Length: 293
Image (cartoon, rainbow, N blue to C red; front, side, top):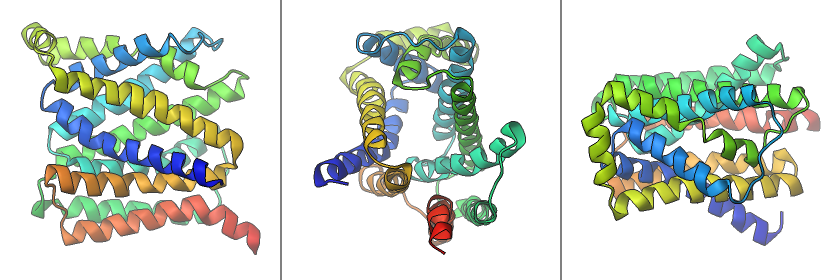
């Protein structure tokens, strides 16, 4: 990887890791469902000027929007509202890689190699250690559980992406952008029944510069720019070269949350974090190590 592309990769990881701090700031101003709905509405509006409508059938737009967009972020935003620290959320959400492996076996009948099974076991043990170590921090059991649910929804989105590709359709930035016209609807419906129309209206009329900056960051920087540049790198290099960079996301998330939000992680949770990262690294590099033998 050239130095320029490596810097691009590092910039993406910082953008995605810092994303969790920005979400925390946004949740201080808006309810979870309203923040989610507005985020995807902005993303759809801005992105539609730059990306053509995908040829993927509409039903796949809906499935993609409900799993990867609505399911993941409705659960994540709720988790962070109900006691999941931003830094730990950035780490626990990476368990999507483990859920993706499990769902690929159950739903797509894919073969899982022994090193992947070992990776699942190691990462699961690390998550258990993190979950059990929440008494010494602000993390709640509900927040932790909702974050795991968000990771599983992300994994279902990954399975949906694989299914779309297997059908011969494209699952690229165009699909991400145009499916975002669907995503705000379930968010706003949930906001109506959970928060009520008065809270929804108050969130809209009280939008300030902090909220605008949050929405711009989440939609334009973290999603459009982030995934656009990531796709650029994936088109130039092998997945084995680019994918390991994503392991830096929780590192940036934990560090920025500690510095800017004052979040603390217990010693037991740090042990769990290292165990989870070990499992994720084995899942990422295990295939390459196996081929070298």
